[in-house]
Amino acid sequence: MLQNINPFYSSLSLSALILFPLLGGLFVSFITESKIRTIRIVGLCTSFITFLYSLFFWLEFDNSTPKFQFVETIQWLPYSNINFVLGLDGISLFFVILTTFLVPICLLVGWSSIQKSKKEYIIAFLVLESLMIAVFCMLDLLLFYVFFESVLIPMFIIIGVWGSRQRKIQAAYQFFLYTLFGSLFMLLAILLIFFQTGTTDLQILLTTEFSERRQILLWIAFFASFAVKVPMVPVHIWLPEAHVEAPTAGSVILAGILLKLGTYGFLRFSIPMFPEATLYFTPFIYTLSVIAIIYTSLTTIRQIDLKKIIAYSSVAHMNFVTIGMFSLNMQGIEGSILLMLSHGLVSSALFLCVGALYDRHKTRLVRYYGGLAQTMPIFSVIFLFFTLANMSLPGTSSFIGEFLILVGAFQRNTLIATLAALGMILGAAYSLWLYNRVVFGNFQPNFINKFSDLNRREVFIFLPFILGVIWMGVYPEVFLESMHTSVSNLIQHGKFY
Image (cartoon, rainbow, N blue to C red):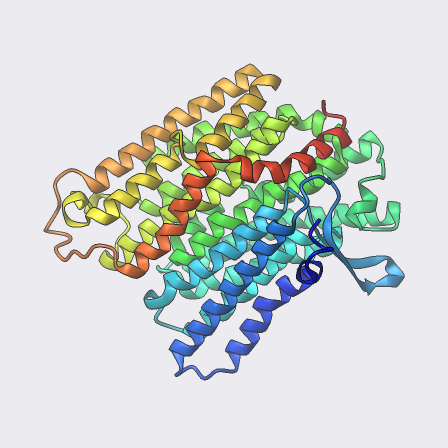
């Protein structure tokens, strides 16, 4: 659209967006450890420029076409017909922006709380950013798998090195093995597809038809990989462990981006490539999701660790997303994308709230807190805002997502929609009860007697989250209009109407 007017727009390059954080990380690695302030500023500037650059893709995005945009093809293994194919559409666009938005926040969070291997911390996050952007842009199945798995490596290091307690190594291994084991089935499925069709290019595969039996086999293999990442019950055990042991910034990335890889995989590969198998397995997904929503919501009410409470509520929200996606209609799928973006903001902000408490008092057990309304008023107001957003109060981003999902699910199956709505009620129960215990009640000077409210850096970290949640909740059309064409194309392609 704007390409004829301004030469800058025509030169937007996804490969540059992927490489820039990597080059920033490389540059940081040459600065001596003693110049820690320079290292932090270089890392922060790199990630911030990446964020600004990613916004241009949104500005230049053409909402009227379902095709992939900004497509680049780089020859990789031309003899085997496997190439780097990068491209964005309305489904992946916002995940790229969410990634570039969260990384500068993560670097700011660790500004003063990270005490060891400070340089490596910044390099790990910049490398992780490159890999995550690559996952969302990749239109080649085999290379998607490569990046999908390589994201685990920096995350494994972040949990294992900068984690907060003794069990961090065990949690890091558990996270790594769970997610790797599931993905091996996907690798076998990709090889099967490659030997049947001779290509792993998604754009070609979307026009290929597989027999129903083959589709079911491939769908199960992809499901094994994506279900662990979502995570769906019963393969959700790694998530609370990983969250509790990860540093605050690690939890933010884990909740904000890594949980979205599984649901994104369903939307990008499973649903469009295997439409008949998707319809065949929809009742199965519905059942698992509803069990997960109710079971994890009840589990959340029983938890005593602040991070575990938010981790289990994340599982419930992500299973809400799977219900929306497998409703296979406009409202359900758009609602699920919106809820994923919303969860990326709200859940990340709640982990930042817990991180702010942990930095001050070095404990995450709920029983040691109480009466923070008197001692940390600014924190209490911000925590209240995100607690309400977490239980999807109208006017916040989660409400739009969950409402659309329920509308979509209701058209497919009224019982499922009713049971999922029960999850919203339980969500309100654990959110408000947690807030009540931490912020009101008697404060306990025996345990915690030094208090300091949020400082300026921390308040500035929360501001973009607050603005994002309100903007998405009050005027979601800005986000929805970029998705409409891609989502309706997905539904027509699978003949789901």
